[in-house]
Length: 59
Image (cartoon, rainbow, N blue to C red; front, side):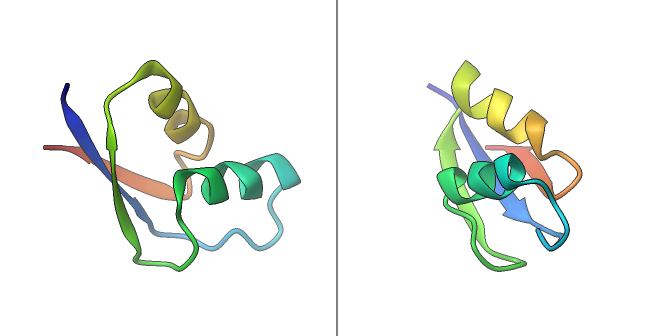
């Protein structure tokens, strides 16, 4: 299974509660923090929901 790297690049202040929970579910708390996840449809959907707050690269 392929891996992706997700990095938080913007703050979650003044965002909806669902977007804040999505970032938390991805494991992102601080700006600049990077996490690795498997390239599954669930994770890609979560990243797509907060694509304006994160950057993603494939490994």
